[in-house]
Image 1 (tube, rainbow, N blue to C red):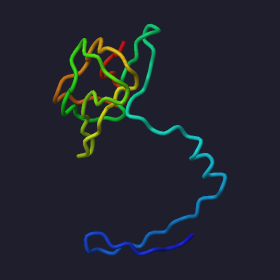
Image 2: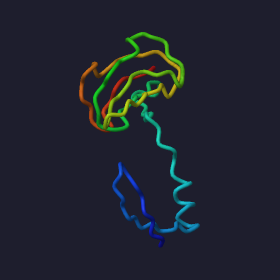
Image 3: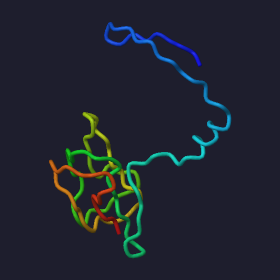
Length: 115
């Protein structure tokens, strides 16, 4: 372990850091990259887009029956004062929107369905 001094906003903190072993690195690399959406089949052809974290919906950029492309920003979710873009995981048509601007959502809550 190594000890470092870190200065944050003029205040000095002493932090202790541990080196990561090769085995632990491979575990981290095997974990799938976090994505702002989860795909979940609802009837075989629909994709449920879920909230990746708890937060507040700042904007909904699509309407029901809009055609969307994979990667297109569907809505903006604010969490811990950060604005997070929620992209479409697939190409398709917006079938249903389950949330409104200003609504607080929980982690894993369905935001919309793309078919």
